[in-house]
Image (cartoon, rainbow, N blue to C red; front, top):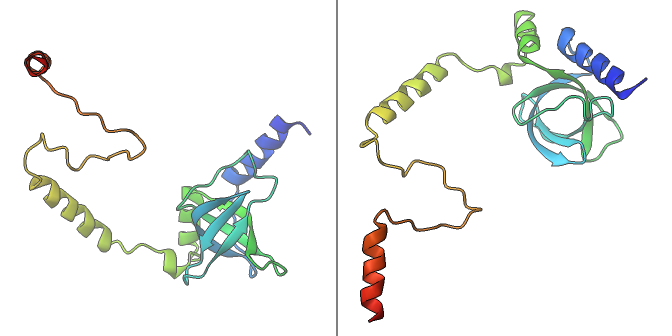
Length: 163
């Protein structure tokens, strides 16, 4: 089977099927990537462990921090405790919530979300002047350059100082 055909079937399986976890499988949230197709995951109860991505998903499907996956446990693993069997997308998550199979630890309480949104709106109203750039992201990987808006005044001052 060619790589394109394999990719087509894997993507079709991942996006088309609504999967429910079996008794041994569990739903976990990906909290970070550790490299070498290993991802750190946390269960609904707060247990953190490593999960591996099987070869059929590699270079075909990607997961990022915050995604939910269904994993199969690995008995012989010390550090790697499970292997990803399905990647859950928004439609899959909604289906599992309707079937009442979604873990309670991952449910977001609807009361808390609007409060956070209201707080951020209030903060934006009292932010002060629009020209304040203190809340902008600062990239620490770049050198800081000092720019001056008045080019002529600087060159005159340098000429006077050199005399």
